[in-house]
Image 1: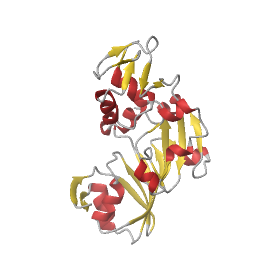
Image 2 (image 1 turned 60 degrees about the horizontal axis):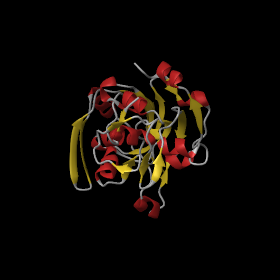
Image 3 (image 1 turned 90 degrees about the horizontal axis):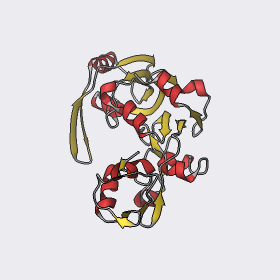
Image 4 (image 1 turned 45 degrees about the vertical axis):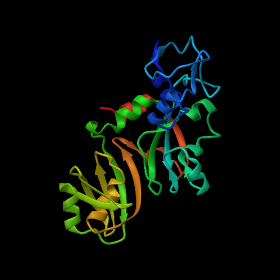
Length: 253
């Protein structure tokens, strides 16, 4: 089976983004059978040729693996860069470092992201196709959260969320505006609600409530479609193995 060079590099888990893959190729840091290749669409058979990045051989994961993590607070959903390490940030990937083989660890990606302080259900896998399938906004995958707020959630706020919120927030000097899709929301008590959305814009739920004059104090993902975190009895920071069949049964359309 032939792969394009950029596809191989994306699958092997050594790079955190497509941009990093392209830069590595264009910089001449990637060799195929010890010859530098700077063409990202170069095709080859990984079973017959050796790929190295700065002299280190790279491999495709043999079998995709799937994990369900109860994400703890205080972890980001990306690999740590040097600046984040200096600021003593923590990554969800570190949870897996000593629990899986190095080749698997290097290939893991999160299925979407939860921000640093958000907790709850997070799928982590080596299967890039699953990531695309679940995060594709056109699939309208439903995700349910428990939202705790600083102020009481008013009827007008509930109605706005059900109709779609015209989000307008300024962060780091930049204004961002968008309208959310209609969502379902039911109060648990005055400052807590169960909210289901079928999209996943950056910090969407927090931004919705900020726009409506409220503040989210805690956000916890309870489920993704029919996959419910409580069914797995995982403490914060714990994970378990699931199968692609499990995920397809609960999530894939």
